[in-house]
Length: 431
Image (cartoon, rainbow, N blue to C red; front, side):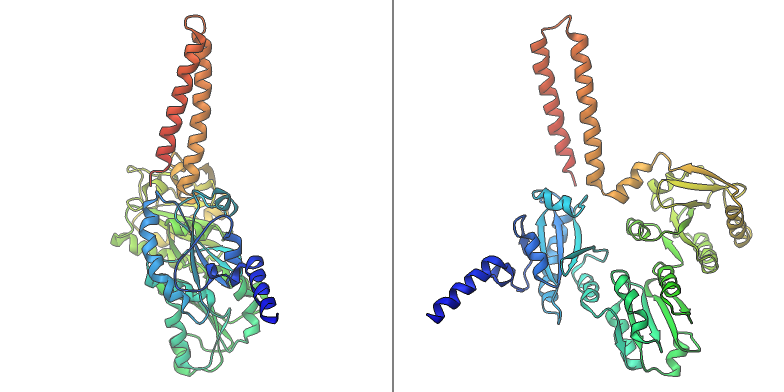
C-alpha cells in the first residue's frame, strides 16, 4: 500500500509541477515549447535562453544549428543554462506578452524573469557569453593569477569592473542591478605589479575595463551608491561608441544626450584620427555619450540627420536618442584644421543654447526599422495600406453607383481587397 501511495503522489506532482516531468529535463537538447507549457518551462530552471523564431525566417534557420551545438555545452555547466525555442509567429499571444517584434529574438529568463540577450550568436561565443549569467553577481578574487583567470572567463563582450581593496558589499547592490550589462569582481590580494598594470596607485580603487575597445578608467571614490552608480553607468559604454543596430539598444538604457559625429567612412585614416580626438573630448565631458557613424557604413541612419553625399563631412549634432536632434550654429561641419578646438567650440556653443532644434529626416523609417524591428514596421505599413484600400474602395463604389450594377462592383471590390491582403501577408513574411 505504501508503494501505491508513492506512485500516486509522483503522478500528482508531475501533473501539478511539470519540472518533474521528462519534458523539462536538462538533457543537452533544445526544448521545443508551445503556448501551454511556456510559462512552466521558463520558471522550471534558473536560467533559460529562449529563441523566439518564425519558420519562414532565414536568419532563424541559420541560428538554429548554432543553438543545437551550444545547448549540450551550456547544459553541462556547473550552473546549467537550458536552451529552448518557440514558434512566436504561431503562438502570437506569447510573442505579444514578451514584446517580440522581429525574428529571431533571443531572451534570457533568470528565475522566470526575462532580459534581452545582446550577445553573439555563434555557438562558441554564445557559450562564453552566457557563462556570465550563471556566474556570481560579484566574483571574489584572491590572487594575481585569479585576476587573469577571471578576465579569461569574462572575455571581451562586456565591460569589466574590478574593485581593488573594495569590500564585496560595496558594489553588490549595483552588481545585481547591472548584471546584464557588465562583469563585477573584487580583488582581495594583489601585487604592486598588478597595480602598475592596471594603472592605479592607491586603494581602494574601482577599475573599469572595456577589452574590445582597449579602454580603462579608474575611480578612487567616493564609493557611496549615488557616486558609484554614476561612474558605473558612464563606463558601461566606451568613450566613443560606433553606431550599429546593437548600439541603439544599448543607448535605450542611457539617459544622456548623444554627441553624434557623422564621417564619410569610419575606416579612413582621417576618421580614425578624429575619433581619437572625440575620445579625449568624451573623457572630459562625461555628461554626454559620444558616438560616431560612417555615411558609407550606415547611410539610412546618417540621412536621418540631414546628411547626403553633398553634405560637408565630418558633421556633428547633438541627439536626444529619440526623434529630436540639435544643429549647433556656426559648427555645421568640422574642418580638417585643428579639429580638437572645433569640437570644444561645438560643445561650448551647445551649452550656450546656440542651437536649432530639428526632427529626424526622411530616413526616419530606416531608423525605426532598426530600433523597433522589421516586423513591427511591416505591420504598421500593412494597417495603413488596408485603411487606404478600404477608403479608396468605398470612394470608388460611391462614384460608380450611377453607372454600374452595385452588387457587381461590390463583389469585384471585395476580391481586390482580398488579393491585396494576401499579397501583403506574403510580403510580410519575406525575410
